[in-house]
Length: 88
Image 1 (cartoon, one colour):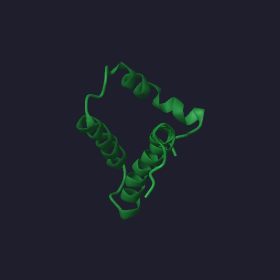
Image 2 (cartoon, helix red, strand yellow; image 1 turned 135 degrees about the vertical axis):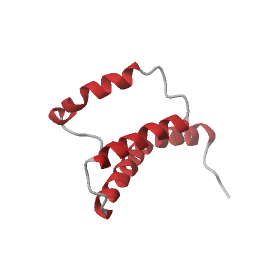
Image 3 (cartoon, rainbow, N blue to C red; image 1 turned 90 degrees about the horizontal axis):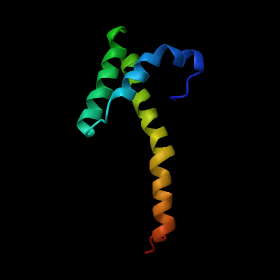
Image 4 (cartoon, rainbow, N blue to C red; image 1 turned 120 degrees about the vertical axis):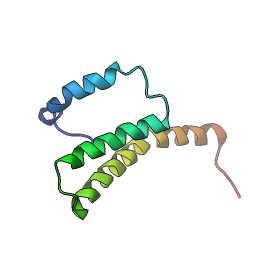
């Protein structure tokens, strides 16, 4: 999960500050470019073995799962509350 301890986070302060300087990430393609660039950076110092490639893709998947849990699910719950259940 994306919740690493404060000591580990301190290694990425410069990167985090750089991200804050971006006005916006304009579209899905730009977001995908940035995520893919991080994945390539991760793999640059690793052997392209199945387990390492798997770790890379699953890290992204776990982040997507956490994003969904924290943001998308809440929006869906709000829509259910506002619009009611779907009945058949």
